[in-house]
Amino acid sequence: MKNPFEILLDENDDDNLVFYDEENNKLEFEQIALINIDESRYAILHPVDMGYQDDDAIAYEIKEENGNFELLEVEDDDLLEEIYKRFKSLVKASKRPRK
Image (cartoon, rainbow, N blue to C red; front, side):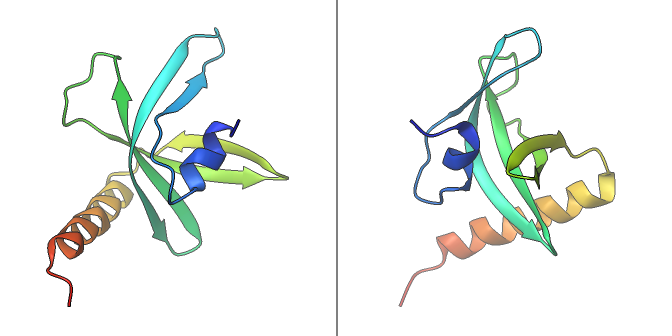
């Protein structure tokens, strides 16, 4: 069984991600997109059954240190704008007819 980060980083796996917080509460997310900016990788995730609207999403930076992964919520407005801009470009490119 893959851990959540293996699922997230596998471009061919779109299963929901399940994490557990410090109090062992289950947190489930739908994968929306992975965005690379410079040397950093960001995940856009939609919280499942956590009281969010259907079109809400949260951007997280994926940090890796010594084989351990961590998701850090992106709070910088300029960085969030850049992530969103790149996400829109991906969506737009995916809608173009292929030759």
